[in-house]
Amino acid sequence: MFSSKLRSSLATPSVRRFFSTVTDLQRAEWTSYMASGRGAAALFGTIDRDGDKLVSAAEIHAFLHAVEATDYVLPKAFKTLDNRAEDHPISYQEFQDWLVSATQEAGYVSIKPAYESSKLIGRRAKRTEPYAWNESTMSQSLRRMQYAVRGDVVMKADEMALEGRKMIYTNIGNPHAIGQKPITFYRQVLALCDLPAAKGVDHPSASLLFPEDVLSRARELRSIVGECGTGAYTNSQGLAGIRKHVAEFITQRDGWPAFEGDIFLTNGASSGIEMILNGLISCNSDAIMVPIPQYPIYSALITRLGGRRIGYELDEDLGWAVTKEELQKRLDEAKAQGLKVKGLAIINPGNPTGQVMKREDLEMICHFCNDNGIVLLADEVYQRNVYTDEKEFISTKKIAMESPGLEMLELVSFHSTSKGLIGECGRRGGYFELHGVDPAVQAQLYKLASSGLCSGVAGQLMTSLMVKGPEKGGESYDAFHDEEQGIYDSLRRRATSITEALNEIDGIECQKAEGAMYAFPKLDLPRKAIEAAEAADQTPDTMYALSLLEQTGICVVPASGFGQKKGRVGFRTTFLPPEDQLEEAIKLMASHHKYFCDKYAD
Ligand SMILES: Cc1ncc(COP(=O)(O)O)c(C=O)c1O
Image (cartoon, rainbow, N blue to C red; front, side, top):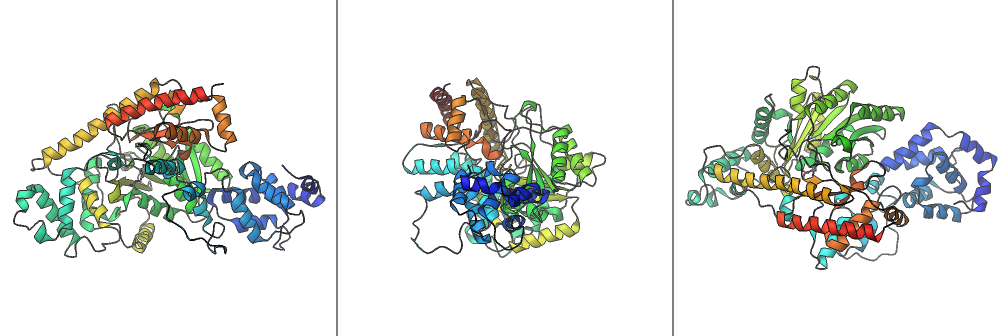
């Protein structure tokens, strides 16, 4: 890879000295930069040994070799370096620009090509002068952030849809987008909350149009919202009356008290997760342990906030459970790198993996966090999506309350109106509950919520409805129950049928989807397919997902977008499309798999 000029420069005494004096700090700066996109200046400082604010191309080469970074740097970036005279001094600004191009696609997928070629993007003004705000001056942690669920496979799918192709979107857990109907009771109450009283709850014909329990529920929520109505900001933590509903729901669910003061209403679980990570990560060496595979909001936010992600592997052969040994091993590794593990995320039921966690596993994780001073982040957005009779959802809060020794566990639990049987993703409702958290930190989180003024009122109202449906005996109850049951039964049938059908395809293996909304199959691909992907600078599962998209119109997410064991290849599909469409999709997946394997047969 080196030019002969550079190769000879690597043999000079100064560069040899450089090699032998590489410190752990340099390695740490490099891994920190690669993880967070932050710290280019510190990195430059470790190369610029004499502090003259200039480094040579040979020194950069030597540095990258010494920290074993060459696999992560694009060959073309080495060429750019080689094209410089070996003694051409490189300033920090030049180094930073080079670093951006060098690490652009290394170890991660760039959004840029797919975005720029997308026909869905508006016309942009042509400009010849350089931009002040460009890829090298922008936030580097944002540049390096990855979010596969809406990544390049999905962008390609959107383009194909625009060209008139029939698409089957199974890439995202967005139930209403693919046919799930909203539950009537919710929509009736929401409409009456928004309408002026004279046109809604107080209209002379209101009781002809709306059931009595809808009207009384709407009146209750209207009084919680107050005179100002649904168009005004609320308390930053969310409307107190709605937080009270949430606290009552948790108390009833767990059999242990909850307090409205510990509840924060949020724009979906996403903004709650972001707030908590914001509150936890204070520097590049602060780390959060996340499952592998994981829902990529965790990795995305950790990168963006400049923290470090420590993956712990879920074991596919154990039905995607995690062992204590694995957690301990990853924690020890993090400590050895000088990192401080501040939080650990679990997703129960799992996304993308679909497992429902057992009580003993939850207890083990709670103790692990408690013993090591780690805040446990429990993502429980799929708590109503359990499809097996052998297991039930148990909240992490309940475990904490019932297990001796866990009284001091520092825990944040998240819930959302986007999932369950509601699926109102666009309404952006959700909450988090703090348990055992320092009141001083809680006050700071309140300050953070205040800086965003408040979460959307539509989402707050939806959250109240999620935790407090119509009462038994009320006029709407039976219809509400039937609508919910219909959605649940269908999801349960689809969870079973998709995993069974995938397992029947030769070369595909899929764990049972016990919960959530996803199947996460593993693919056995011919060696030639893996080689072709490598040659195309793609992960094998991205190549597979793009082929599936082009051949069948089915949009899935490559499993590498969630993280997976080295060498594993797979994808994530939701089982949300209506049953007839899902059946068709499975048939297409089977024929595509055969087509793909034949194409690359050894
Ligand atoms: C595990 C998990 N957590 C959080 C979210 C965020 O959802 P929302 O922000 O819509 O509540 C999702 C969305 O798919 C998810 O799967």
